[in-house]
Amino acid sequence: MYSEAKAELIQAAKQSEEAFIELYQLYVQRVFRFALSRTRNQQLAEDITSETFLTLLNKLHTYTPTGAAFSSWLFQIALNHIRTHWRKEKSPPLDIDSLADLIPSASGNHKDWLDLFLALDHLLEDDRNILLMKYVDDLPNQKIAEILKISPNSCTVRIHRAKERAQTYLQTYDQS
Amino acid sequence: MTNLEKQLNELKEGLEQSSMSDRAQAGIEQRLRLVWQQNNAQAPTMTNTKKSWKDRLVFIMPLGLSGAAISFLAIVTTVTLSPSNLIDLESPTSNLSEEGYAISDDSSQLVTQPLGDADVNHSKTAGLLAQDSARKANGRELSDAALMMEPMPPATIGTNSKDNLSFGEGEQLFDESVSLGIETRQSITELITNLRTEISNLDGYLVGINYNKASGATINLQLPAEKLTTFESYLKELDRNNSLEVSAYSVENISEQVVVIEEAVKNAEEQVADWQAQLESTDQQLTFEQRTDLQSKVDEQSSYISSKQGERDELIATYGLIDVKLTVTEWVSLWQGHYWQYDDDTLGGAFKYNLAKVIYRLIHSGGSLVRFGIWLLIYAVLLTPVMIVCRRLYRSYRLRHPATPKPPVA
Image (tube, rainbow over all chains, first blue to last red; front, side, top):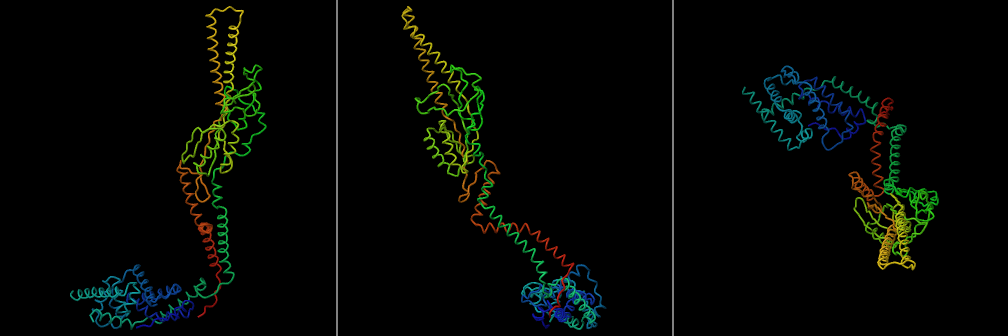
């Protein structure tokens, strides 16, 4: 479980460059992995991370603590950038070699990884995001609900349904 | 754990091994620092830099001046357009000034029209009874010289008793009619009751009343000529503007009709006297039949004389009264003490009346404070575009001449 930035640091980051950089360093790797899991492209993930923190810099003064975690807001910004990017550009075909570069542990069973990513790509965007947040980003249901702006109960139901759909796809690939 | 969850966990572990390169991370950090500094230079509000008193003055002054101007305009409008002022601005003016209504001694210079078509539409001054100085010495014949008239006191023709009837030499008889108009705030029924009492006191009588709410009341009455001035003074007191409108005045000289009758009577009397002399004369030897015939002629002519004299008296009695047509315009109360002329003849009139009614009630129910608030709002809305333009000008000026930010405090 990752630690959240303290309220004092967020408040100081509104007025101090150094505090903002500290905030950036605290979250940069998490935002990068969040972007990488969705783009599966190192360069693109870095660009998305950069855009996310630029947006944060410009909009931080509008942030007011509402009880939700700060990272939820940050991931929401990152998710918006990812969506905007995919709206402009089409997703490239899955390349197993680049996948091996991206995930060193994926060098073993290539077929299983390929099936997993194909199944995720076939899912609706909301289903894909919710599964990645739950199992890859390791976010609790409460935070996922905050990012997607839904209730925690609805979040649980949607995770369950997304998982069922993904399993159905995986079974189909196994049979074929 | 399902196969899917297992694979996703593996993906998570795999991603945890990958991280952003230090170079990329440093590049983003450098970019963020650069943008931070640019933002501070362009938008000092993002930092805790304090505005100088000059900046504050430049920003506050237009707002303060606009606010003061709006408040001033609202106060002036509230005071100027108070309901009482509004009613004065909107009310129709009474149409006759005091000068136009006064009776002038200069009427001696008046020249009237020929008797045959003596309809005279003019001011009341011209309606004064005039004396016929041109009547010929025999007092019976009227010529063109009679057109020149001189002022004379009102005719002394009574109305109730024929004993007062007189039409001597040097006097003329006029058929007069006058149309008057007043605006009243009284209840129309109360006004009519008061008028009837006053008319009765002046020895006049009411001919008819026609009233409807839209056009007001039209009252026809007859008054002795000499009482007209008194009646007009009374009406003036009733009018809401303490003035009286004379919309028409006509005078017709009917002396000739009386003169003709009197001439006929005189001729008949001379004839009767002649016959009477014949009857009483002892010089003439008249037969019984001739006497009887002469007597019957005398009787017949006497009867004719008496009927003509009756006609003459009736004529004098009739035209000794002035026909008065009085139009009363009713002003209805909109709100305590404020009146408006009711008009539903036209769509515009009805709309204006009802709109005024609503506005008056709205304004009066809230008092001055609400009126001030309404005007303040109106002026604020009107001046908003000006303020927006001022603000934009200020901003564009600030972009060209940016304020130097103080070092941010960590």
